[in-house]
Image (cartoon, rainbow, N blue to C red):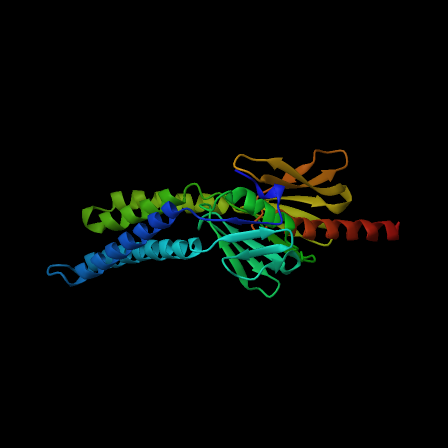
Length: 288
């Protein structure tokens, strides 16, 4: 399959019909399950506790239906990439100079692309053909503004336990207090433990006037600018097209620090960290 790195003057990427029908079926099934849970509210013999359980399950299935319906709407269009810019569907081609931000959301399985006015141009999903390569190309060619220090750069956090946490919470609600406190407490505890693990692994970078601070949960690692000899981007090709990009902090007399997984893309992070480091180095040289 051709990759956008071998970019012609313009190329169009599409979603498969099978993916669209799968999400249509999920939206229909979720809507029916939510409607059924609401209808059971009026069944004879349903007490207050069971009504509460049914309301929770109705909300969950309604959320599934809304998510699937949003996926179907995203998959209706196409994505056009060109040397001059990008466009979604039959929309006008937007110059790369006006594409300033992306928002990568792995849990919701989408990447939103925004223009200089804050308007969302595209909402891309992994079902798009050559998704990884398209994502890499957009992040590489957009023109982010960066942020002056002090600012915070959000990093992607692992969501590996999220489905188990949600399933455990639903089991705790379904079993309920009438079958003893131990089973729902166990499932509720599993859900809370996985939520705490997510918080402990949540990552971001604080860019300050004199240093960067790498944070993960309650831990932090400080790198003063005076220890940094260079800031650059390094790419590693990945299966499926595109590349995994690292922002590398080279240090004098110590190992370099590669950082990947930026929620707003590596280009935005580089445009924030590198000028801050360069300004601090210039200021130190002027004082010296």
